[in-house]
Length: 201
Picture: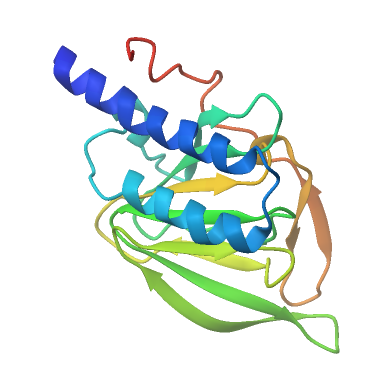
């Protein structure tokens, strides 16, 4: 059972992050500044794994879950928890907006994919993201990758921050062999956005 003290801690940690990121984005900073200053804010959010409510940490037996934690009313950003069961992974996909991925629990492997002359997509370098680390994606640098839970026996959770409401943005998955592109809108596993700080002052 969650104590009032724990609930307040959960609420205020995420609320502080949302407030600080909102202030950062108010002046329309460059992506370089967002990734520099915003990355530090996200690192602070994921530095302690004690604030994400238990219902938003639940894996699905067949595929990863994408829970909306906060959507900015002006569509400047969204905050999402991605929950991965053992060995679960994404298809090859893009985002179309900037993104920061902070590892909260477990570990995930990201692999960039690159368009070839024959129209296919081939994997490039991979990296493992450990708790406390933050990776970035951007259409201005590289935006096509696969993410997977690198653990075969445990759940992994990452906190994603995107430059828009990622569950409502039309983007693409790619067949790596043929290069065929299919549009999709991901939506969210939760039917509504919880107010995680309703008791915070």
